[in-house]
Length: 381
Image (cartoon, rainbow, N blue to C red; front, side):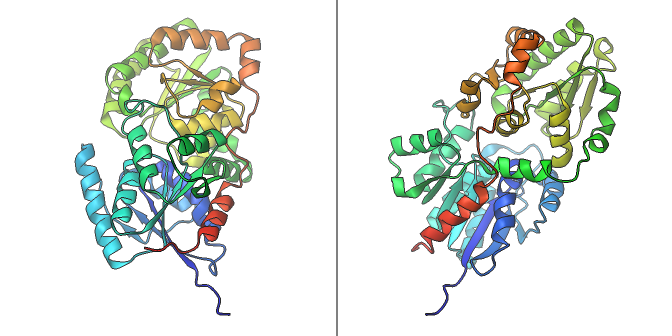
């Protein structure tokens, strides 16, 4: 019997989270060239943030579509990505296109692949808030991807339940865990460099360091201003509190944050920096006191490291963290944020939230994704 040819997998990514969560799958697939022939394409959705993370996972791009434009709008971005991907699929039809999460890149790749009859495997499938506006466009993207994908790699049983409730056939769903935890374990188990990586923030040692991130579109404008107002109030109230805030590249985040937090009243206890490479971010996450964020990925990573999370959203597609007591939804509301920080000052409250919890996987999700692709084999076009 002739050996089966390797499955041709095309990974499409374009943002930092996609590199972090598809990186473990790409790396695992490349350990078995007899089973998988791997190509990686970037749309360039967030091109400036990709290079260091691609290097960390040893990923060399086979093609970059360079879709990013200054001050880009959503419609134009998606149109450029679909046009570039259509040209790619016209020349080369892989057995599977692998996408991750809920980005515009993932949606554009799924739409283009479906149009060419190419099977799509969706990593991190089935997350839902039930509200198309929260977050936007992510909630819409993941629902649309689910309607077109052929393999749904759900991170949790609850995510798989959402897919079944929407009519996805059970044989097309596999619970894999979240590949974010694969990436986190890879960094955590690397030679210890926390002190070196956190050195730029060393002046903050001795106090309680609050790690802050923010990038969600629904928090632009009033929401970002409200979060900054809460941080100023908290810094005034607790003299031992310090803030480290890696700023997203989007000027709708950077400009109001810099304006609000570069003030004499909080001078010396706020570090505003560019986005961090992943090992540095994980080291800082492990060293901080607590996290204030609107990020989905941080809601997965921080509980695993035993760090309380205050989520500046009113809804989350990751309810497991809330149910376990590791995450608290505070919205972009100064009163709720400052109140929650005050609660964390109670050692009993802090201890209850700071228990390490691996809620979203065990570090083997990438291998389960590949096993599911092997079972499905080469789908008919």
